[in-house]
Length: 402
Ligand code: SOE
Image (cartoon, rainbow, N blue to C red; front, side, top):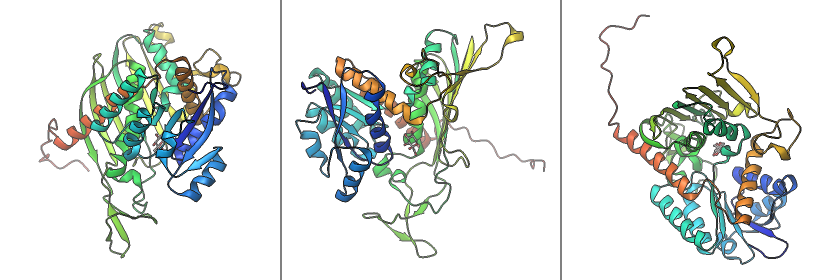
C-alpha cells in the first residue's frame, strides 16, 4: 500500500455492468465512510481502446489501458479489481497476487474448481506478504442480510431446520436473445447456476453459518440454440431455418437442487433465468425452532421476522424496516426510513475491503470461502449430470382427471 497520503490506488479490469457498479462504489465509499485509507480510481482496463477511454471518462478513472498485464505490474497500483467474465478471473488474479497486489474478484471466483483452488492457494501465499484478497459476493453487504445473520447468530431463530432460497430472472426468455458470453460455458463456466445460484449459495451459508455438505440437483437448458450476437468472432455458427447464424447454448438456463447443511438444516435452491416476469428476484427464508426470517431483494430495506417465543396470540411475521443507525452499514447514510438500494451493497463491500486492507486484516469472503462455493457449484453440476439420486416416477396408468 502506498506510503504517501494513505491512498489505495485501484486498477480495475473490465468496465461493463459490474465495472460500472464497482466504479460507483469506489467513487462513493470515501465520501460516505471515514476510513483509514482512500481509494483512488487510478486505472481502468478494457480490450477496446476507444471504448475503455470512454468508460474511463464516464466512470471516473484517471487513466485507461488495454493491457491488464501492464495494470497488474504497475508499481503505483495497489489494488486489482477484477470485473471480467469468469474465464479470465484466474489468470488476472494469479498475476496480481504474484505481483503483491490486493485483489477483489467478482463472483463466482472462477469457472472451475481447479482454478479456484489455485487462486485460493495463491491468495494464502500472497497473504504472507501482506496482500489481501476478497470475492465480490455483494449481497452479504445488504443491511437486511447482515441483520438476518446477526439474529441467527444471536440464537433468535434457535436451531435452523429449513433454508429456502430462490434467485429468479427472466432476461433470456425470448429465444431471439443473442448468444452472449453468459450463455457460453467456455467464457462463463456455467449459466444461472454460477451466475445467480452462487449468490444464494454464499448468502445462505453466510447467514446460517452452516455449509452445504451434499446436493441433489437438476438443471435444464430450455433454449438450446440462439442467434449469434453482432460481434461474434470465434463462435462456431450454423444457420437456423431463416438462414440467420446461430450457435449452441452450452450452459444451464435453470438449476434446482436440494441440499443438506452441516448444521443439520435441509435446504432448497432455485436459480433460473426463465422465471417470466421476475427481474432480479432473490428471496431467502430461514426457518428455525424459535422463529423465522425472510429477505426479498426487491424489498431490500426490509426483513420479515417471526419470533415464535411470543405468546401464540401475538405471533406473526413483523416487517423490520432496516434503516436505523444501529443497523449494519446504515450509520453513514440517511435518517431512518430514507431507504437505500442495490448499489449501496457495493459501497459497503468496498468499505469492508478498504478497512481490511488498511488494517492488515482478512476481508471476507476470502478466496478460500469462494472456493467452497465453487465446490458446491461443481457438486450441483455433477449431481445433475449423474442424475444418480433421481427416482423416476412411474407413468400413471390412469388418465389425469381433466
Ligand atoms: C446476472 O444478470 C447478474 O448481473 C449477476 O451477474 C449479478 O451478480 C447479480 O447481482 C445481478 O444479476
